[in-house]
Each structure stands twice: as structure tokens, then as C-alpha cells.
Length: 256
Image 1: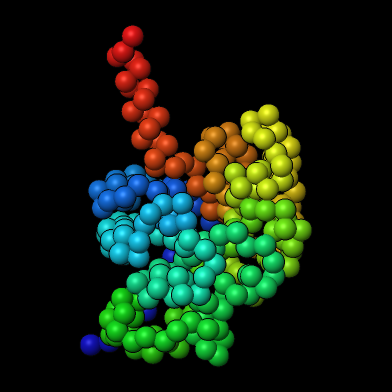
Image 2 (image 1 turned 30 degrees about the horizontal axis):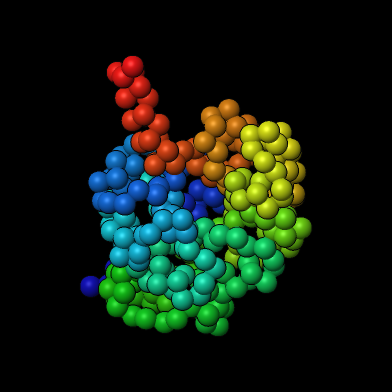
């Protein structure tokens, strides 16, 4: 029996300009994923750029999160066609591509997610994304449900921001504060005000292009500020940091 193509609710929400609150997930293990999935966030970012997560780890996270009403987003380790292909084949529908610095790199990322003739995604049949070959005409229909988010986190990315954001197939632009600060020569926390101005300027430019904006901000007041500025997908915490801070605070209250 043929199966229907899975709809990408995250992409639909972006198009509808619905603000979504997310959590940055870096911890290994199915239990950590499940705890995050039931916590009430709209989306979870599974990071493979700064974690040792393998494709198999990502697969387990996708399978675990699928039981709950939360969207899964995956950040590959790099803007690499083979890496992206493998993630798509195991069922990733929304990708956050790191360190995009030019229009050409944005085009490369989009092409990696599209089947020929629109792109250069490799063709396979009985993989998880196609429900192991049971989705009829998967290859002809899959592109519509793929969501490509590009990450701006360098001076070069800022210099080419409008060109990057305007690439057809780029569904959203994510501003990465930490790397952006480092690449712009800003030291935190003393240069926080300058970083905020840089981010606000980037927001204005992205808004003019008309693409949804995302950001990670673990400071509540800043996260609310960026939502007020029109950010659509905002991650407000990192699982490792939340666990570390809560654990350390509890220990301090009981130790002299």
C-alpha cells in the first residue's frame, strides 16, 4: 500500500509567519531527546556541527521525537552535499546549513536538497525518507517538503546577506550570534551592545528581502527582543547548558 508524503509542519509555520520557540539539543541519548520533545517546545535543533553525533544518532533522535508534537531541525556538520544527502535519506526535512558566506554557497545548499533537474540530490529508493519505498512518486514530490535554513555567522556572510537570502529555495535565514561576534572581532560580554546593533541591522536587511529570521539567544530578555523584532524561529536555550546550570545551582545550595 502506498503511503502519503510527510508534510513539513515547520516549513508551513514559517510560510504562515508563526513564531516558534525552540531548544538547541546537543546531548546524546534517546532519553535526552525525549525529555526535550515533551518539554513543550515548537522545534528542536539537533546539532551535528559541534557534537559527535553520527547519522545513526540523528536517526534515533528523529524516531524518538516523531512521537511528540514537535518539529525536528538538523544542523549538518558542514555545507556538504554527501552529508546533506545522507541526512535527507534518513528523513530530515528541515536543515540548518552552517557558515554560509556567499550566494554560491546558498545555491549549493539548496541544490543538495533537490532532485535533478532542480538540484543534485542523489537518488535512492527504499530509504526512510520515502517510508522505505512505499511513498508513491517520492522523488517527484519530495522537494516541496524540504526546508533549507542558512546560517549567517561571519563578516562575509553579512556582506553578502541580501544575495544569500534572495536565493530561491532558501526558506529562512538564521543569525548565529556567537560566531558572528568572533568573526567581527567583538568580545563578549563587553561588546554585547555592538553585537546587538549588528544583529538588528541584519534583521532589517533580511526583512526587506522577505525571508523568515531565526536566532539562538539564551538570555530571555534578548530572545524576547528578537521576537519583537519579527524573528520567526527562536531557540531560547541549549540542553547541555540548562542541565549544567540547574545541577550546579542545586549543588551550591547544599554545599558550603
